[in-house]
Amino acid sequence: MKEYSKEELIAFEEDIAKEFNAGKIKAPVHLYNGNESSVISVFGDIKDEDWVLCSWRSHYQCLLKGVPAEQVKQNIMDGKSISLCFPEYKVFSSAIVTGILPIAVGLGLAAKRSGSNEKVHCFVGDMTSETGSFEECYKYVKNHDLPVRFIIEDNGKSVCTDTKKTWNSVKLTYEGVCDKHIHYYKYETKWPHAGAGQRVQF
Image 1 (tube, helix red, strand yellow):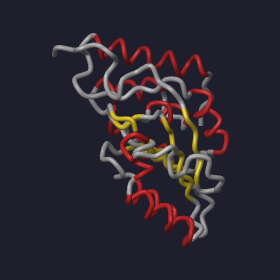
Image 2 (image 1 turned 45 degrees about the vertical axis):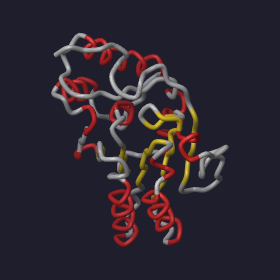
Image 3 (image 1 turned 90 degrees about the horizontal axis):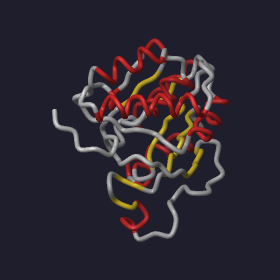
Image 4 (image 1 turned 90 degrees about the vertical axis):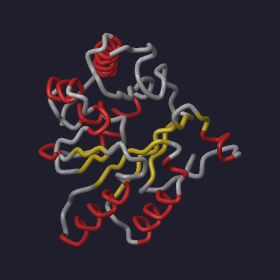
């Protein structure tokens, strides 16, 4: 595990944005901003032996789990920003929407069956939390009391679409839920869904 300040996390993403806008990263990037304090707080409950699973936006999680910053950046420069996987640090990401959910359930089930102290922390976006796949995985985790926690990071967007408008709802299904298997937080980001705000010609 590695401790980072809010400023250090922001500086890392700003550097990646600069590299992307300079045309040096020839693959999609999805950047964080505005959730630094929240994600640092979440990692206060994550231990070295735990699993961290993410979607296509996972730079902060990799850093906070202890993957060296230079190693994370090199993988991003190599075009792997949306699928960062570091098994030696127990970090896995998937660019497939909901693709990481059943893996989290499987890891949690294996941990419970083996009597391991490992826990699984699965980061998802607000739209993913509204899918049928999420409902099924969450229900299985809750009913079988698996050591899995879903962290719902609500930036109000699914690509370029407002999540609540999509479902014609006032609030998200798990917004405000008090449950050991759910941790929800809301944030606003300055970055678009993908890229760093400039049209890049490769």
